[in-house]
Image (cartoon, rainbow, N blue to C red):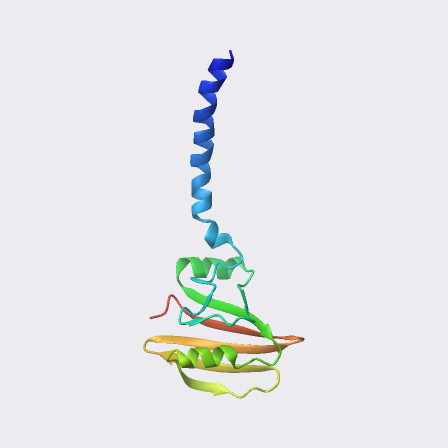
Length: 141
C-alpha cells in the first residue's frame, strides 16, 4: 500500500502547485504597492528620496482603474514640511509646472506637463508628515 501512496502524491502536489501559479502571477496587483511600476522610483523618472515612503490608495475602485490602465497614481509619505521635494524631482526630470496654487499651509497643488504626459501634484500637510499624491491618465505618455 505504501508504494501506491508514493506514486499518487507527486501528481497531487504538482497539481496543487499548478493551481497556485495563477494566484502568484496576479499577486503584484493585489499588493499594497499595486500602483507603482517601480516603488523605488517617482513616476518612473527619478529615484525615490531616501526618507519617502511609497503608498497606494486602499480602494477597490482605484485599484481597478489602475489595473485597467485608466488611472495612474503614486503616493508618498515624507517628513513634515517637504511639500516641494517630489515636485522638484519631477521638474528635474523635465516636467514643467503649467499651473500652481501656492502652499497655503494646508496643501500645495500643481499641474505638471512633459510632452503629452500631464500629472496633477498634491502635497498635503498632515501632522508630522507631508503626504504627496501624483495622478495622471492611464500610463501617461
